[in-house]
Length: 117
Image (cartoon, helix red, strand yellow):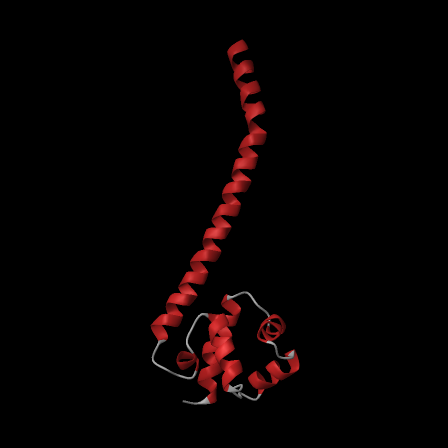
């Protein structure tokens, strides 16, 4: 295992959770300067903090440290992507429903005009 592996695996997961480095650092209880220093210098945090990171990211510490659990992280990234897509679809559906609600009176009015002529 090398230190690059830890951050190569952690950074995409942090991004998939839609967290900034600052937000993630605060979530795991470290300063943003400490956190960004770990990334910049490719240093792995202490075991307890690395474990906390793994829990928040939904993977095992073994995976972050270079274990062979790539499938787990891939599934987690796919799950987050699917959830994000589903939320976007639900938002679009709500917007469409609102537009249809607004158009109903116009459609009714158009039918009346069409029947008149």
